[in-house]
Amino acid sequence: MMDSIILEAREKFVKLIEGQLRRSERIKRQKEFIRYDQLEKILIGVVGGDGIGPIITMSAHRALKYLLRKEVQKGRVEFRIIDDLTIENRAQEMKPIPEGVLQKIKECHVILKGPTTTPREGDPWPNIESANIAIRKELDLFANVRPIKVPEKGIDWTFFRENTEGAYTLGSDGFNINDDVAIDFTVTTTEGTERIARMAFEYAARNEKKKVTVVTKANVIKTTDGKFLSICREVAEEYPEIEADDWYIDIMTAKLIDEKRRTQFQVFVLPNLYGDILTDEAAELQGGVGTAGSANIGKRYAMFEAIHGSAPRMVREGRGKYANPTSIMRAAVMLLSHIGYEQEAKKMEKALDICTREEKKLVITGRNTGATCEEFANYVIETIKRIDSG
Ligand code: IPM
Ligand code: MG
Image 1 (cartoon, rainbow, N blue to C red):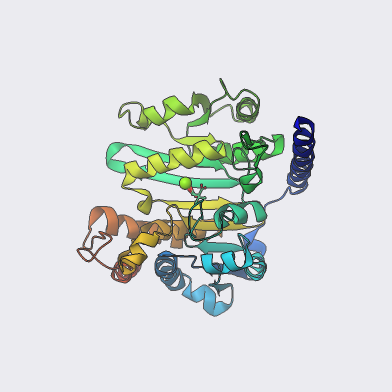
Image 2 (cartoon, protein in one colour; image 1 turned 30 degrees about the vertical axis):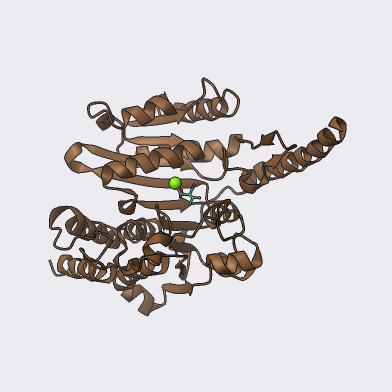
C-alpha cells in the first residue's frame, strides 16, 4: 500500500521537476526586452474581467483614449476590447484562460486588465486556477511592480515582487499524497531571481534611489529563500553606489508600521508570496488596496491591473456603479510610462493626485453616499484637460 502511494507521488514529482527544468531553460532563452519605440503600432488589449472589473476598466480606458487620442488617430496605438475573460466562460471551459481569449491577449503588446474572480473551495464555481496567475505564467510576466506613496508621511516605496515562481510556482499542481498528507512546493531559479533582482536595482539606479531592500525568510526557508537572497546579493555587487540591505518578512511587516523606520525604505525586492502580502499591507497604509496600481512586466508582454479583487458582493448589492477606479487608473499610468508615453503618464498621475489627495472634490465611498465610478472618471479626465490647458 505504502509503496504504491510513493510510486504514484514519485511519478507526479518527476513531471513537476521536468516542468520546472524546462521553465528555467525557457527563461534563459529569453534575453531581450521588447522595444516599444521600434514598433510601428502598439496594441493595447483592454480586458474587463468580472464583477466590478468592466466598470472600473472602462473608466481607465476612457482616460487612456483621451490621452492617446492623437496616437490612435495616427495609427500608432490601437485599443482592442477583449471582454470574454469572465468566470462564467472560464468555468464553462474549465480553464483559467479560455483558449480564444488567450489567443487575443497574445496578439497584443500590453494589457489593461480588470480584476477576475479567483474561485476557491466551496464557491459555486469549479476550483480552477486564478486567471491572474495563469496570465502571469503564460506571458511570463516575472516582475510585479507596485508603487506606494504617502507623501505626507514620507512614504515612497516601489515593490518588485517576483511574479512567476516561489510559493506560486505550482498553483493548482500541488497534490494530496494520501488522505493525511498534502504537498505544495516553492521553487527558486537562478535566472528567475536574477531577472527580478536586476530590474529592482536598475530601477533604483535610474531613479536615484539609494537603497534596495531584499525581503525573505532565508533563516528558515534556507534553500529557496536562501538562494533568492544570495542571488540578490550577487546582483547588488554590480551596483556599488546602491546600498543593499536584507530583512526577514516577519519583522518587515512590523517595520512597515514603524513610523520612524519605514521612511528609510525605498525599493523592495522579494519572492512572490511575501510580495503578495507585503504589498497589501503597504497599499492599506496608502488608503486601501483600491488606491494602488500594479504592473506585471515580462520581456515580451506586460499587463497592468488593479491590485484588488472583483468585489462580487458590491455587484450583488447593486453597488457596482460606485466602485472606485483609482487602482486601475494608477495601473493605466504605469502602462503609459511603460510603453514610452512618459508625459501622458505624468499628466494622468498628476490628475489622480489632485483628485484623490489635493482637491478631493468628489469622494468615492463604494455606495450611494459618494460619487459613481463614471462621475469620478469624468472628474479625472476634466482634471487632465485642465492640466493640458495650463
Ligand atoms: C494579487 C492578488 C492575486 C495574487 C490573486 C487574485 C490570485 O492577490 O495580485 O496580489 O495572489 O497574486
Ligand atoms: Mg494580493
